[in-house]
Image (cartoon, rainbow, N blue to C red; front, side):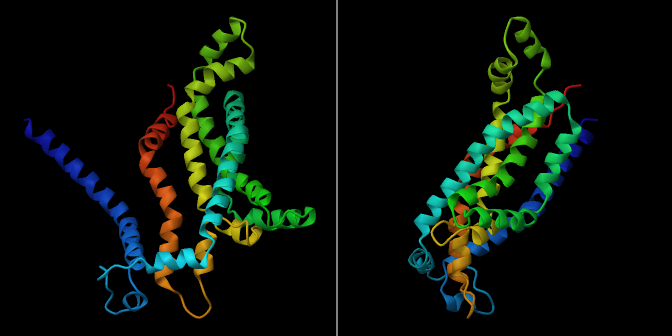
Length: 278
C-alpha cells in the first residue's frame, strides 16, 4: 500500500529533474561552447570537425580584447549608467509601486506592464531626436535616462506585487496611533517589502547591464558601456570568434557572479511576491 505513493513521488522527482535538464542544458552548452571558443586560437575555432576542448588553451583572445578596447573605461561607464539607473529607478519605482498597489489601480499596472514588454527600439528614435535637440547625444546622462526605460517598469511591477501583500491593517493601526501616511509607508510598508526591493534592484541591474542597442546608438566613443566591447570586436573582413567569445564572457561575468551570489534572494523574493492573501 505504501509503495504506490513512494513510486509516484520518485517518478515526479525524476520527471522534474528531466524537465529541468531539458530547459537548462541548452544554455549551459552554449556557455561552455563560448568558453571553449575564447580559449582556442583561430585555427581551432574554424576547424572541422569542431574541436571542443582546446589543446592547449590560450588566453590570447582575452589579451586581444583588452588591447583593442578601452575595457576598463567601458566597465566604469557601465557601472555609472547601470548603477545610476537602478538607484533612480528605486527612488521612483518603489513609491510608484506602493501608490498603485494601495489605489488598486489595475489600469496603471497594465500601463507599467506595457512599458515593460515594449521593445527598447520603440523608445530609441524619439529619445535620439530629443537628445540631439538638447545636445545630450554621446553623454553618460543620455544613457542613464534611457536606461530608466528598462529599470523603472521592472521595479514598479515587482513592487506592486509586494505591496499588495503587505496587510493594510498594519498601516491603518499606525494612522490611528498618529502616524502620517508617509510614516506608515516608510516605517511599515517599506521594511516589509525589502525582499521585493532587492529582487527589483537585481533584475533591473541585469537587464540594464546587458543592454546593447542604447549604448551603440546614443553612446559616444568614450561613453559607451561594456556590451559595446563586443560590437568593437566585429570586423568587416571576418568574424574573430575567439576575441568575440572572450568579450562576451567578460561582459557576462559580472551578471553571472551577481546571479550566483544572489540566487537565493531572487528565488525567495519572487516566490514571496507571487503569494496572494486569500
